[in-house]
Length: 236
Image (cartoon, rainbow, N blue to C red):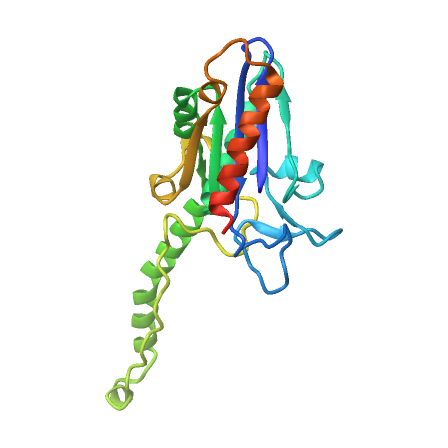
């Protein structure tokens, strides 16, 4: 189990939970060894356990660098703000950007679809693509400039060297050094990232049988079971 973030609003009585899982090929027994490299996961200095980013650098700093694998993180917000939901969007976007499997548990499927449509734009990927494309555009100019420095009488004896391939920017790839990406809440997450995402939606209301008499403990047990089944499915 990677990470669970919940957003509670006292006045509205809605609950949104996002759960993320990684496969055992990436993480074995909730640890990350020296020979295992997983995008979006890094070793925790104190214990050696893997940690993942919440998608927000300030929150990562408050919890010691990130959320440890195998732990739960709950975020509660009051009825006068949407900070809890915003942090949930950061966590969802971060996990999806790193191609982790995501289980989104919300009040109903309509709420889940609304959250998916509100995911913030990944600026880290956007900048990486723009810089790489700019580098590609400069290469021909450098080649022409080099030709001008060679005396014309010797130019015919010099064989042109093969130019190394220039990496093209990808709109859905994160730079290898990135751990916590930067996001823009005023824009939506790139469609190229969403197209390759592994996201399953789960309705808390459906799990509870849409029965108002279902206790909070019973509902939580059903959600926990759904999360366990999701982890078992992707933890192969």
